[in-house]
Length: 80
Image 1: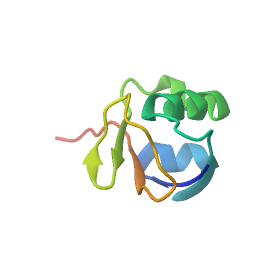
Image 2 (image 1 turned 135 degrees about the vertical axis):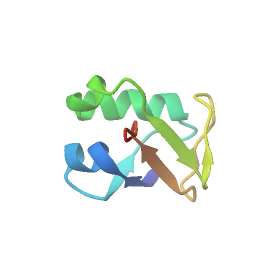
Image 3 (image 1 turned 90 degrees about the vertical axis):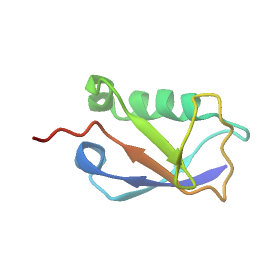
Image 4 (image 1 turned 90 degrees about the horizontal axis):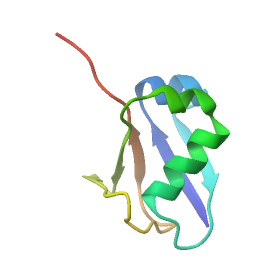
């Protein structure tokens, strides 16, 4: 299935774009997406936490993804 990922912060810097068309098998989960992204973009492996939002809500690792979903990668945030 074809997905469109929205990237923010360090994920945008690693990939080099704010949006990324991405292909995964049908019925792939959030966990499968993260595993494949970390394989395709090894610097993402260094992130201690990387959240995924699906349709504007934080997703669980076992959530199944659909082509119509809005998927955002949310990197760790620091500040003070």
